[in-house]
Length: 317
Image (cartoon, rainbow, N blue to C red):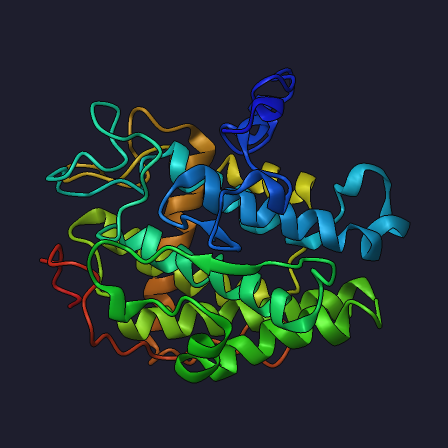
């Protein structure tokens, strides 16, 4: 961790993603090897730093909406990643490696975590899309993303690879940064950001298996609900996202957790879980025919093919 990051104030840490004051905020904060900026996307701080850099470079497009870049609609991405980390969802679910666990490497992001794998497509792909669009125009060095130890084939690591493996997803993020931010209208920008977001999730769902047990049900319901949020052009600035996330479960759901009666969850968290599962159940029981409130997006069936680790025992798989 660069020394200047270690000395930053922690006074506001509670409202930002965990360890936000330690996160790289410039390309120079990452190591340079063989004239390449090397980013370990399987380290929580380094992946979160990619979001911090995106926020920094896109800030000028949101300056008219308020001070301190808090109305930047990209805040939803790092805040969601911070919730995943704080709730233990980025760790090795079987704890066979110690990755992401306190007794092991607590900053490690496991390639066997369903949430971590899903988040990859909402971290690396937007970042590479921004790079391809020219958002980071003064960056002189090539950028190298470190592959996971296993399951390399599941993750594209460069602009060229991602343009080949996920062309529609890359195109959506590239267009968002290249075109729609320049023609800025907050609602229009939200529409195209959510389009790119849902394309990322749809691709990841086709290639990643579910978790087991109650967490699987929640993961499926949450991902389904994202399409409704997208259709609403749900604002993803700092304050709205922070308030919304207080209703998300603070830990992984376990066998025996009965929604909406989970004792160590708040009333709001129980209510949100109940609503998410009810919405998803209704949508599934009607053949995924429910229509969102506005916009072009509809809930579509998800086909699951390739596993993200051999951790799935769910009836959904």
